[in-house]
Length: 108
Image 1 (cartoon, rainbow, N blue to C red):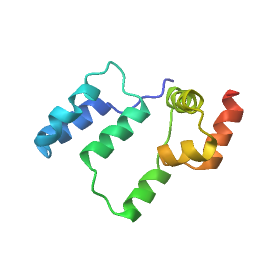
Image 2 (image 1 turned 60 degrees about the vertical axis):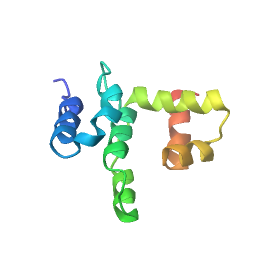
Image 3 (image 1 turned 180 degrees about the vertical axis):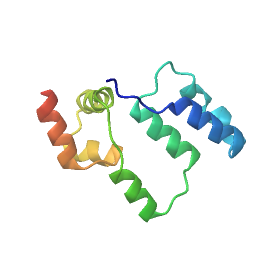
């Protein structure tokens, strides 16, 4: 049985049209992509709902999940820029342990 993913394009398009039409133009290039990766979803979420308090941001960060392509993109970013685990974790608001675990799993 194949795992079905939410249609993020439809969800974000509806939110932008109904509640934040002024932000549609800024988010449009990301919504035009063929496939939205988790990093794209997170970026859209930040662009639309930028003002959030610290408690909400922490809860949101703990509830994130990343697909393999997003993890590989983060690790490639780390390698390309010569960052250590702490710097990557700070940039993407992750745990250092998550980055270290991903590096072990994907041998980067």
